[in-house]
Length: 247
View (cartoon, rainbow, N blue to C red):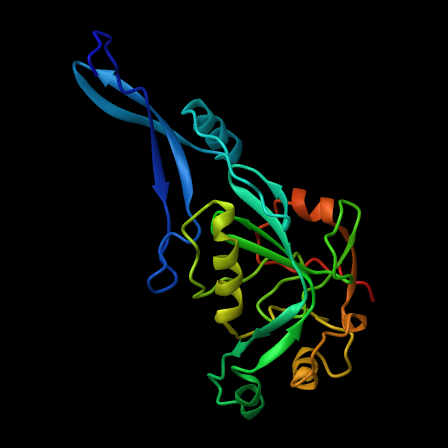
C-alpha cells in the first residue's frame, strides 16, 4: 500500500479436509502447493504437490510468524510455534464414561471424582498426546514414562479426540482448556491397547477400585521405555498401537 512496486500472484495453497465428526470439520486436512501460470493476462493453477510440514513451517517463518513472547509457567517443559508440552501434578478429577450400550458398570463409574497420577501432555494443532509419570514431580529429559491409564489413548500416546472440544488457542493459555477437554469428554473405547494398567482386571476395575480413594497408586502404572525427550520429539500422530508396553 502506498508503494509503486508491482506484486504478482506466484503460488497458491489449497487446503483439503473431511468432516467425519458433526460440528468438527477438517480433522485430517492436507495442503497442496501450486505454481500460478500467467497466460495472456489470465492466471491458472499448475500441477500441485503435497505441502510438507517443513515447507509450511518455512512459509510461516517467511511471513514473520514466530512463537509469541510469553512468560512460561513451571509446568511447561517444551514450546515451539506449533507445539507445547507440559506436566500436570497428581490431583482429583471427574471422569465420564460413554454408556451407549447401557452398561451398568459404566453408569456406576460415570461422573465420579477419582485420584489421578501425575501426567505429561503434548498438544500440537488438533492433536493431543498423553503419558503418565511415576513420580509427582517435574520430569527431566531422561525421565521414563508410563502408559496413561485411560481409554481413548493409543500405545503411541495419541489421544482419540472424537467429539472433544479442541482449543482454538495455540499459546500456553490453552493448557487448561486441553486438560478440561480431555477429562470432560466421554471415555468410550480401549483403542486396541492390550494393557492400560497393571491393576488386576484391567482399567475399568482400576477406576472402580479408585472410587473414594484419595491418592492414585502409581505401582499400577505400566512402565515404558520411552523418555520425556523421546515423547517431546516424536511426531507420530497416528491412531496406532506399536506394542511399546513392557510385558
